Length: 130
Image 1 (cartoon, rainbow, N blue to C red):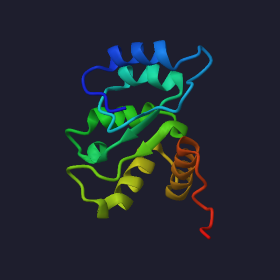
Image 2: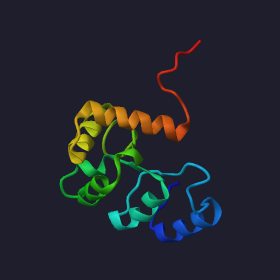
Image 3: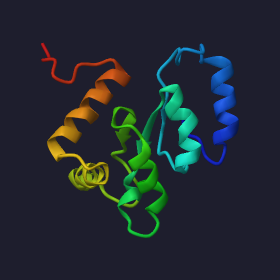
């Protein structure tokens, strides 16, 4: 979902259409998550994934994103690869900074993100082609 300035309204729609009370009926990712940690809380409680852009790296404009990233369980984090302010080539920096914010070793953080991707998209990234 790409939610802009409609977090409260969107959570109501999701709860009425894909929430069974015990969990989400379908996997949900909030693409380019830009809300604060309070707005993230109901989404996290429902089991949604939050996908963060490189915004948390910026010392000034990234404060809100950094706080939200810190409060989001690592099992519910995805990282964007196509932010407007940081070229794709800096993806290693995004991973390193996110691991630092979460207080994790880089390899452990990377492994968790791969696990999150596999679970969300229902794929095995280690599967061999052909």
